[in-house]
Amino acid sequence: MLDRKEHLSEHFTLEELIKTSFKTPDNNEPPLEAIENMIDLCENWLEDLRFNYNTIYVLNSNEDYDTSKEVEPLVINLGFRSCQVKKAMERAGLNPSKTSNHMKGCAVDIRCMGVEQAIRYMVILLDMADQKKQEFDELFLEKRGSVYWIHFAAKPEDNRRKIGFILK
Image (tube, rainbow, N blue to C red; front, side, top):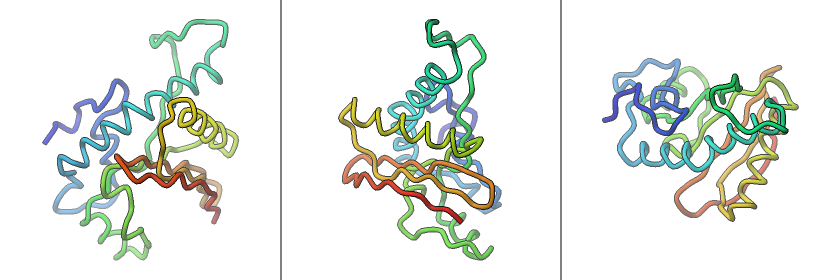
């Protein structure tokens, strides 16, 4: 098992991708296969999303990208979810998917500061998929109350390119 503080990529740690508000005996520890999937997700999608968002919308587009400048981080609300966390969610009255990509380390929920940022993240991810000719499994803009987030999943194979909006 990696140390929770260890980086999965330049800007994302294991701790960020396994944090949960549900306390379970397994401490939401992912198996090696899930860690490998999270590394792939971070290196091939999240780092590029962070870079592109900051280059296009945060930094002056006439400047070269400089990681020493203040940029907006991607904030992960949810990454990996163990079976025990899923059961705890069910006991709390939530209805997590039985086949969730989160349980394989293939999905993240990215916090958004509103609908505009969520749409921009979605556009960047779609453009990345097209430019790289790399598929993803799910890309959903989700909203509950006034809170927005992007659910994004990419699996090692059998990606479906499902796109949608889940507004509650």
